[in-house]
Image (cartoon, rainbow, N blue to C red; front, side):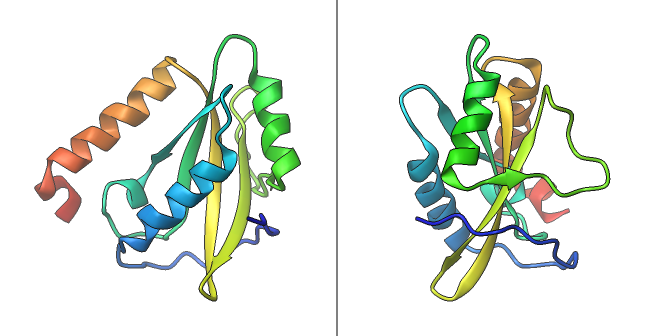
Length: 137
């Protein structure tokens, strides 16, 4: 897998597709090593249409934030390009891949495993998956 240069895209609505699960899993498999768990979060993980950006979290333990960031950079992910990027203690790295001639944009959040942020991501995803009316809204 080759992580390509991320670019800003026009905010557009894309219907949800099962392809998001497939692409997310292939990226998770690419990123994942014994030291770091990687999970699929955000709207594409709970079957909701939106921008179509695949959000993942790489979960680090102890003081391995820098190691997690360096791992992503070595794989080809780039620093977030935004007027208000996430802070250095909770960074996000971005990239893009092409699958079957379609571009998929990736946001990888670097989160401490077991932190409040990690728990909130899991709770929100589970809430959305278990509440079809919330997804419909």
